[in-house]
Length: 204
Image 1 (cartoon, helix red, strand yellow):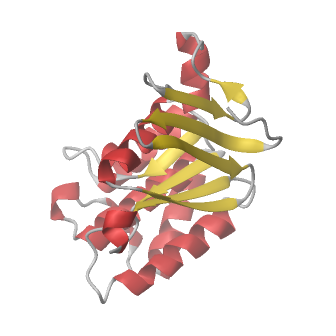
Image 2 (cartoon, rainbow, N blue to C red):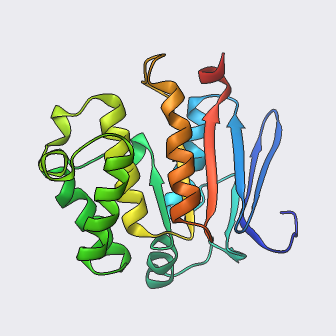
């Protein structure tokens, strides 16, 4: 694995087609395009589990994950959150319950502050907080589901925020709103590492 200072993510996967290396500097914003959806899912899963599979090497915040014990791995995972199909909303919980559960897991500020943040973000997208937060995931349109996942990610206040295929599933009219997702992330997580991940298949 390459040795570089101040990397939030350092990932190496050895394949029959050569090595894939991804490095993301801490505190910055990076964009990564993987060869296909399978490679993207494998990379995002490694980050979220803080665990590498055979043929992979992974360091998070400068710490190799391969030899981590259970409690140490759990602590590392709490520093990471994602907007990703891999960690979709829990369908039998409403939006607020999904958000507050993430806040409790990551140990972030009091729920009053989380609720105020959620209201501000929803207002920026033109929604009223109370009815939106009371909805179940199955009743959300694709853009609304991503918005709920954005609020859940922000409630976690992660040091590493992984945004997986942000525009996937959105209509042509909805895709320009992705810029508002980025601005909310930049404004509300100014010290975090923002990692936008996509696949070349989706860009074609």
